[in-house]
Image 1: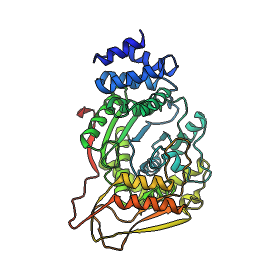
Image 2: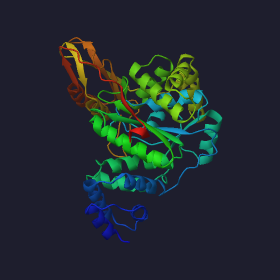
Image 3: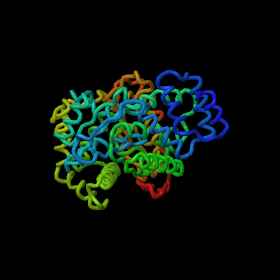
Image 4: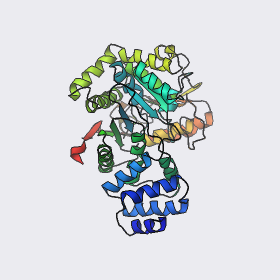
Length: 438
């Protein structure tokens, strides 16, 4: 078996065997297969695509390329949630304490963000003293004691994915369903979850702009999860506008806390509840979505989830006062209000443009080495369908540098489209994909 023959085989449209895919993944991970050969192979996959079995085989090989976490010492079924990424998406910060308040274990491995805003780890580091660096033993101990722990991904978690994605990023081979699905699911499988809920975004602020593309990706990932023995479900959700009113790390933490206090924006709360409800159902903690939803909602109404968040943050080095009183959370020293230049209905709020504005202010990173300004970001005062008058404020920039604020303001103004007539609001959850749909 040699790489030249396998590149040629896939280039010519033939199906690779399980052993051939393992050979490619392991050889590249160990440095025996060179970048130029792997680049040629990825381009062949890009054009010829992979069938369902090849995609599953690729995912399993990537997951097994490093450490496969064994979470059997954690009591109960472990259910993980993954989002394909969106502007203002802070649902993990909300649903995790809700589930933990019902004694449902949340054992989550998360990463940092690369792009418009930070990842879950970046957001959590807005809490002074909070740490996601710990041994596997401490991680398991925290989950068993508090029903919740979020740790940073180890370097040896699906190392093949890290190497392959870095190559895809510079060889124009990112946009392929099999390669996207295997990248996401290899990390989920390696993280040790028993069941997986996927939040697949579609719209202007998502990687998948069209609903049909999002559905295809969702079906591929659900198939992978089920074939790997994990109960898996995917929700196709709207990302034509940011999720919630805050975009930026510390700002999003503050908004998540507001939701747990019962004061949050309705779309953000609704999606968090729906995702958590599905986690309960596929984990076997509840039979019906409606019952799960009501139990989760009660954790907000009774402030049980808020108390659980405070317990969680303290268990990982932070302070309860940061949750209850906002003490120590980073805040930008400057704010600037942005005003509407005409009267009408907000018919479009381009999530990508909002994300670009937040990135300029310092809320995200272009390269992995970039430092995030945790206090920077954007507060959205109006959302799609809202009537607004000329001269009325529609957003607030949170920033440190005036020059960056001026750049962000120009982009943000282009994100808004104001018309005379009000458009119909898009549904938040478009579809639910289970194995029956695959």
